Amino acid sequence: MQAGFEVGNYPYYDAPGRGIDFAAMCAALEGAAPGTVVVLHACCHNPTGYDLTPAQWAETVGIVKARGLVPFLDMAYQGFGQGIAEDGAVIGQFVASGLDFFVSTSFSKSFSLYGERVGALSVVCATAEEAARVLSQLKIVIRTNYSNPPIHGAQIVATVLSTPALRAQWEHELAAMRARIRRCAAHWSGHWRPPASRKI
Image 1 (cartoon, rainbow, N blue to C red):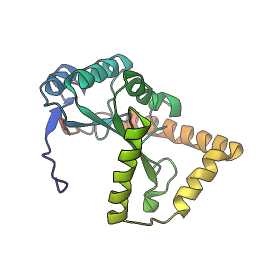
Image 2 (tube, rainbow, N blue to C red; image 1 turned 90 degrees about the vertical axis):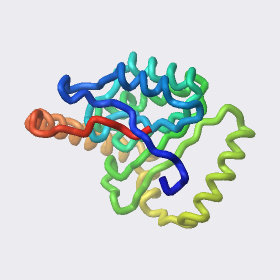
Image 3 (cartoon, rainbow, N blue to C red; image 1 turned 90 degrees about the horizontal axis):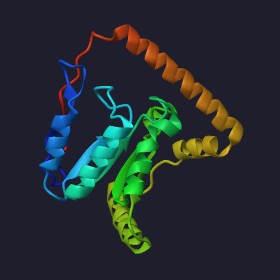
C-alpha cells in the first residue's frame, strides 16, 4: 500500500472442504482489471499449505494471460514441498506462456539464513531491450532502498550452489527437512485453520 497500490484479496482456501476453492479463485482473477498485479505462491502456499495442481496452474496461467494480469510469483519455500525441481515447475509454465512476470525467491528458509535476507528478484521480459529498461528501474529502486547490502549471505548461497559436493549435501539436508515437515504436518492436522483469502 505504501507503494501506491490498492491491495485486495481473492478467494483461495476452502475451509469446510479443506482445500482450494479453485472456482472462486478463477472467477476473481477473471474479474480483475487488466494490469492488476496478482501475487501467487509458486509452491508451499503460505499460510494454507495447499498448492495448485499442474492442471490448475495451467488454467491459472491461461486466465492471467487472457486477462492481461501481471503475475508476481512468491517462492520462499522451494524444496520444502515436493522437491527443488518439482516446486519450481510452475515457473516453466509461465515462461512457456510467453508472459512477462516477476519471481521473488528467498533462501532465508532453505539455507537457514534468516538474518541475511538472501534472495533474488527475477523479472522475465519479452525482449533484451525491455529487460535493460527494467534493470535500469530496479537499480534506481535498489539505490534508494539499501544501496549496498551485505554480501556474505549471498556468497554462502553462491558457493553452495556452485560446488557439487556442497550442493549435494544441501539437497540431502533439505530433503530431510521436507520429510520432517510432512511428519509434523501429519501430526498436527486438524489443529489449525488458516485464513480464507489471499492478496491480489
